[in-house]
Image (cartoon, rainbow, N blue to C red; front, side):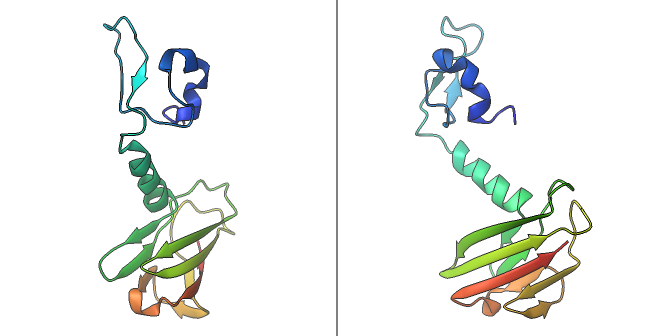
Length: 135
């Protein structure tokens, strides 16, 4: 990913910030310090990227009444797992992709109970919730 902090490691001397951080801004070509980044611990970028990964790629999409699971992943992924605390409940989510789909829900189970579709009402969540999602 070209905009990931680690993709900038070959420019560390120019950027002047930690290789794992996003800067709030980077000086442009008109600046005598072109490429230097600033204010690396005061940006919302890291949390925005995290939300994009968790909600967009891994597909954990909360709303007022519960949680929708809708991953959008590379078809090469066979499986992945997520451990997440959500509204005081601990979720262990296992996503299986036996047909190498990029999205879609074939079946989903919450604590062994088969659900219709990919939505989990908050009332179905327990202190330790096991979710199995098959694409």
